[in-house]
Image (cartoon, rainbow, N blue to C red; front, side, top):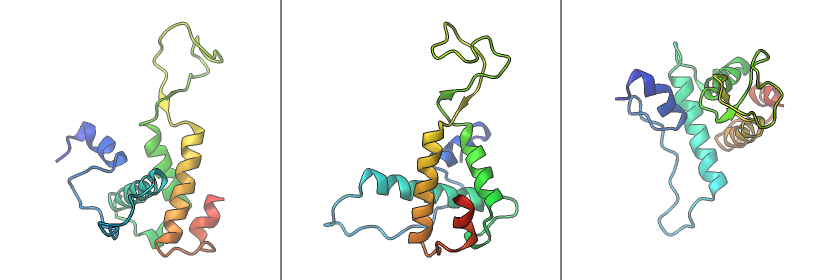
Length: 139
């Protein structure tokens, strides 16, 4: 079982031992390997599903709202690798700061944009209709 300090990171990486992830059909052994995009899309979808199941109370994908999606993106933000300087930081506005600071690391906008695209595609592939509210809220 994941320690409390690593639990969130494990979920973000899609590797937790607390609840098994639903298994999507695996490609037959003789089929070509999944592309990087398809692998990321599957991992992102499974991570999002795990996140929803870990909510109190658990949220089924059919009951998911834009707030759940925003909460998920905010949750993942803590695992980002892009330094975001606070307005009060001496390095605020500097492209290449001369030293270290305690400003947080966040997800880059492009990473979040790509994640949303993969989740939308996975949602539709897993039976979600593009005219359902969950997709309209992602636009």
